[in-house]
Image (spheres, rainbow, N blue to C red):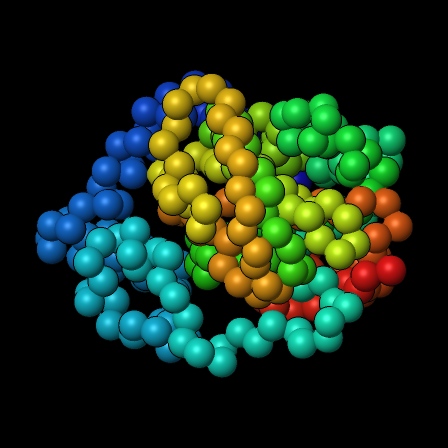
Amino acid sequence: MSLTDQLKKQLFLQAQRIVPQHQLSRVVGKVAASENPIVKNIAIQAFKSKYQIDLSIAQQKNALAYKSFNEFFTRGLQQGVREVDANVHSIVSPADGMISQIGNIVEGEVFQAKGQHFSVEQLVADPQLAEPFRNGQFATVYLSPKDYHRVHMPFAGTLTETLYVPGELFSVNQVTAENVPSLFARNERMVCLFDTEIGRMAVVLVGAMIVAGIETVATGKVKPTGRLELQKHQLALAKGDELGRFYLGSTAIVLFEPNAMHWDAQFKAESVVNMGERLGVIG
């Protein structure tokens, strides 16, 4: 890495700590929710151009037909674009994106990036709810700004609890993953817990800088309160059903119990995946 690149990285990391994360995110959230034609059209066009958004696979292909930037960002895909692996034994990717890390949870520790780990207890924010995953399996999927931003079920199950966890809003990318300790266990997040035929499963939706909201099918759009909020549910969801969505990009982390499943060998850090693509198999 050149001296210039090192300086840019250090400035970026320093800015993460200086910028008023929540205030900035809420301001961006108001702009993103605006239905003012001038505001939303400028935002959509600028974003579409910068990230080369492919609307050919979207249900609504006219960018300016969306009522707000949020509606554009959380756009649905046309039917048949993402097929969910039909094998009853398969575990599928919960989202379009890139695998950040995938593998075993070792004595409660989840690998974040080189030199960085976090505990599953920190991530789930409840020792009792975290315990089943202590020596289980995890996969972390990063959703970049250009990706489809709905999160789907990796395996069929019954949603039993959601736990909103307040936290910081660091940006989520390779630089922060390698340099911010316990990044995913520090950021604001929604922990979704399930009973499945192979035991407990969790899908954790992690917020990030200017992620102006997280929404789930059980809770609606999350309203940050600054405190832990546990809700009980009994909602059965099939593999591939929509679980939630991000209002601007972030990360989804999937957790399974020990010996419940295993990941397919070809998947590793930086593998590109699509929602519904097989990542592993039960047993």
